[in-house]
Length: 338
Image (cartoon, rainbow, N blue to C red; front, side):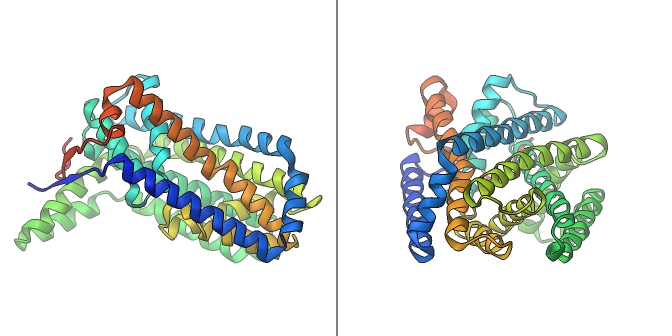
């Protein structure tokens, strides 16, 4: 029975610091290339008030997504007191920019100590990511209506959304695959598909009927709030900027690109996509860089800051995350239970 160990938090701290340094170099390089005076002038136009307003629009994103997360755990038969659950959920954001989806592992570890099996917590994580994907695709479709140049991308997003809904409605596919593998005596692969069956069966509970549409609606509201913040930043920086539909399209599409590259936090890929699409919509290079930097500070890095605060609070007040925060090695049975 194989085991894996969660790395010490010190390693995560180093990864976070490295990510911050790389991000700073990326943003500085973009500013120098685009003309730092133009970038700084656009940042001044956004001002502290614009940044605060955007942060206030980012907060609903985390709050709405937490409500959805809590609902998924309840549907899977593992509701938790909201204070404990909120701390666990937010702490995962501290490790958003570290490789290997460490945030997911931290949540699963702590939820296991609360009586939630790994297959359940992983299923909840996968449902949440799928809901986010579908919500971003929906916003891409919506933004495409106001952006004629993006009609083809919007049609592709509609097709992908329909394909996802079709796949989610056929959970027996992996059961059939597991049986086929088992009959051929492929023991190790059969163990993996057996674990996959557990996750998929839990996954299906959260992706049928009203639960699916409810989760999708909350995802659209959550990411739409951040898209609106992006729109406000663009207008403050450039005076006119893209329309609301165009801004939401740019933000949602760049976020999707960042997620699909599997880079920590989409670092680099999301920024490059935002700048390119802003410039394609008529925004100047310096302004596009300024809008992107401020937007990422108010979304990605704001979330990391909230996560670090939640993790620090948990390490003082709760023994569950305290062991991780103090760097103890925690062994996890790789054969997920539940």
